[in-house]
Length: 265
Image (tube, rainbow, N blue to C red):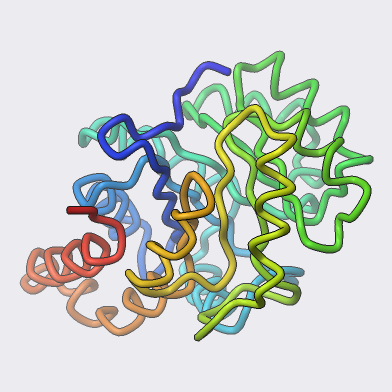
């Protein structure tokens, strides 16, 4: 693994998800920088996809907006060098469904990953048992493959957790992504089981949308992924983010919101 995903200042991982190209490619670059300033330790850069398996309605709408802007997997990866040029230092994890990778061809895909300095890869619709070849190519190309594990993984939890790299992404509940008011009580035993087997940080995602939920989850794991709550804030700020005259203020407001979720005192 070439990248350290641990936040040394808090010993917790804060991994925000944003959709590449929403509400505009140039804004995506600025949002990534704002999230770094807000304390993110890595960013999941979502590839907009027309037939998402795991995305809830908020992220689906973000994907529609990005696709209307002409965004695709190649253009999304090409945003990363511009982020680096502007000062982004934290890891970028590409969140993509397998079909765009398949359409490009794995060799072409990894050539673009290397060229555009992508640090990690997460493919939610690729079952662990079918990911061996991709995981092998990730190692060959210095990319961290992020594994997903869900409460329904059952007897597979140990096998997935023991082979995880970077951090292991625990799905907090069944169904798609989206804001949730509360989590099933079984999440505690599930996270404890993953902790038992994992040699890397254990991070929880799907539905985390408030400071209170962040604190609740980080009491039992090593960090959180927040997506829909941030995308909803981007949607609310869409108009001022798209206007150059109001973008700076909108970015500041977005950063303050993200900081309110992630920061610890």
